[in-house]
Image 1 (cartoon, rainbow, N blue to C red):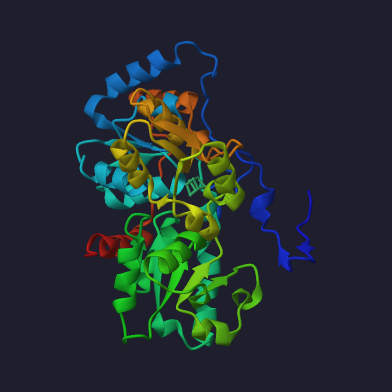
Image 2 (tube, rainbow, N blue to C red):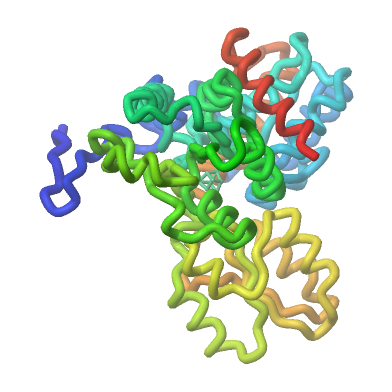
Length: 399
Ligand code: SF4
C-alpha cells in the first residue's frame, strides 16, 4: 500500500480517503468505499425492468422511491418522485404511510431523509458506496478542529455556521449545535442574509461548509461582497492555512471543499461553447467555480435550470453546466420543442458516485424488501438527528 507523502509544492498531505478504490474496502469515516453486501443480479439480465416492476408492485404503498435529478434513466423510470435532495427529503416526509423510502441518490441525501421522516420509516440506499466526494471533504473531526482554531483566534462567538445540504449528518448536527442553518443552492442567499443578521450588527462572520464555490458565488455575486471578504480554510493545513489576522478580517470563512463534477467546468469550457454555438445561452449551477459563474449568462440550482429550460423559447440554444445525466434528459425532453441543449464541457462528466445506483442495485433492493429483508438501511443516531434537525428547521423558517 502506498503511504501518503506531503506534496512539497502544495505543502499538503493527501487524505487517505483518496487512496480508497470506490466500492472496495471500508472506511467508517467516509461515505465512500463500502462494499454493497448483496448478491446483485447480473447487469445483462434481460428481465431486470420486469423484476423491478414486479417487486415494486408487490410492495405497493409500503415503498416510496425517490430519484435525484442526477440519477440514470434506468433508475429514474422507477422513481415515484424526482427532484433535488431537499425536495426529495420533504416528499418522503409527506408520505408517512410508506414504510420503506428507497433513496436513489447519495448517502447524505438518505441521511437527510431519515432525519426528516418518522421513526417507523426506514430509509434505504440501494448501494452503500454511493457517497458524495464533496460531503467527504468535511469530516466531523476536521470541523471540530476548525472551531478550535476560530476559538483560539477569539472569533468563534461571532461565527455562524451555514452548511450546504450536501454535507453529512454530523456536519448538519455541528451546524445546529452552533446556532447555524442549512442551505440549499436555491436559498443560499436567504440563509446568508439570516446568518449575518445574528449577533451584533457588522460583527458576524459566516463559516460556510463544505462547498467553497457556492459560498463564494453567493457572497460575491448575490450579496455584493468582495473576493477579499472571503478566505478559504484548508483543513489539511495547520490553522486552516490562515493567519489569525486573516480570520479576524474575513466576513466569509469558506471551507475548502468542492463538487468534483461541477468543479470540472472551466472558463475555457464557456469560451469554447460560445465559439462553437453562436448565440448560445450559458446556464450553470452555483457549485461551479467563480470564474465560470461570472462568465455565464444565468446561474441557478437544478430546479432553476429545469424551470429556465421549460420557459425558454423554441429555437433557443443552451449550454448547461451541471451533471450529465440531467443535461441529457433535458436535451431529449425539449428536443421536440426545437430547443438545442448541450453539455457545457467537451468531456463526459457524470457524478460517479450517483452512478453507483444502477438497475441491478435497485432490483436487488426492491426484491429484498419485498421478501421482508431490510437491506442497506441508513439510520442517523438520535443525538445527531436532533441537532441536525434543528439546523434544518432553521432553514425551513427562513423568510
Ligand atoms: S454531483 Fe457533486 S455534490 Fe452532487 S453528489 Fe456528486 S459529487 Fe456530490
